[in-house]
Image: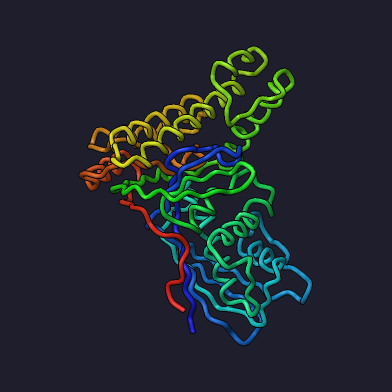
Length: 362
């Protein structure tokens, strides 16, 4: 019998560069997915075909009590396997798998997180010893985050894994514990635009994250009760002369983005959805990301400008930035908007909200 599991990519509507600082975000799973199909084989070999990128992965089941050695940077196929082994999952045979996806790769739409989520779900399903820790979407997200971020000491957060595993539109909170609030707002069509420019995820995450953390450490020497969740712009202005310009800008941008996320939540939870104000908040978010966090690019800016002129209501860069994707909200004439994005060199996709990780066939 063949098992097929799929998981979606995501866009971050509000709260870019916030989750790893334990600040809230609003995410949306999108209807571009990665799927893993496989069936058991008689030997102890896992053979994973990756025809979309003309590659493959092959590894052997480790001996009891041992793990699989990593052979490259961000070795997610093996790290997920090791994580579920540590949870107590047990495998008696190998598997022959084939992977397909239509999520843009290395573009900020969480293709790697969707892979980790789908692979975690797949392994939990085929295990000969299913355990409670793999029983629900939140558990799958937690394990996928361990495999992708914690295992390799990456600077990113966990919003991608919960967005992909749980699906839909989520208000995600991370202070003390993960809290997920599904938002029932009905959003129309978005247009995703891939700049096809590679992005420096680790470099940008490190610059923004540690810029904020360093600024906080300096301020706390003078204001021990400083809290990023409640800090105001006038408060940080008092300490501007103690910070570098870069530290002050990323801290200022973080507070502005935190406020925009809270404003967006109110609009998205209101009985009557104001899509124009929603879209305007997307534009304001983009301005902060471009001007203060400096994660946009000239090509992304050109794609956004073309899309807005073609009828999109608002939009922003998506993901860590420095390249990758942008998106715009285009509930009317999305095809025209997509054409405008492609005319300035982007690759456009029409996207809508989708569900989380799921078993397609068993």
